[in-house]
Amino acid sequence: MKQRGFTLLEVMVALGILAFVVISTHQILDSTTKAKDASDEKIAELNGLQTTFRLMDQDFSQMTKRAVRNESGDVQEYYLLAGRYVLESQYDGIAFVRDGWINPINLLPRSELQAVGYRVIDDNLERVYRVYVDQLDNMEPRVQQVLENVEELKFEFLDSDNKWQEQWEVKALPKAVAVTLQQIEAEPIRRVFLVPGQGSKNNG
Image (cartoon, rainbow, N blue to C red):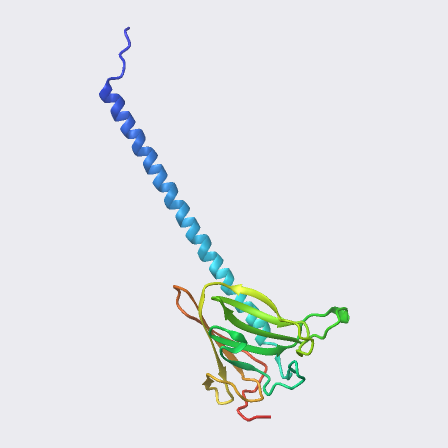
């Protein structure tokens, strides 16, 4: 039996179908890749926020009444220093001393106290800390970048009347610290962290 070959029209139709399948497959693959990239980016953002708030919770929950001495030996007036541009931050900054810095059986030449702070530099949220609480050694603080693309950082403080204050200029610890954090092209997030203080509004 004589075999019949493909006509030009049949070849063109087959090529057209093949081209359609290839283009459709490419579009599906491209969409899947973009969706995965967007998902990975969102997961990374969420992980960054979780790490940030976990660090803050550890630090704020162990805040302690320890005055800090500067390079000149003068004692800082308040236990907690906070406000706009504190620590050279673009926005709010905060600095205080926390307890509970692990030092197993005192093996390291330091105490369990740690001077810590949070600030935003070049749109990056940084946690800064000192190996020694007092600044008498003239050493620069160590810096840990914890979050990128930050466009606002704000702190509020809960007093003994359960009212939120934007400033805390008393020699006492608040009952809680509220942190409002906003990343670029994102909604602001507010978290409240308990502090081992009474929120007293009286100095001393």
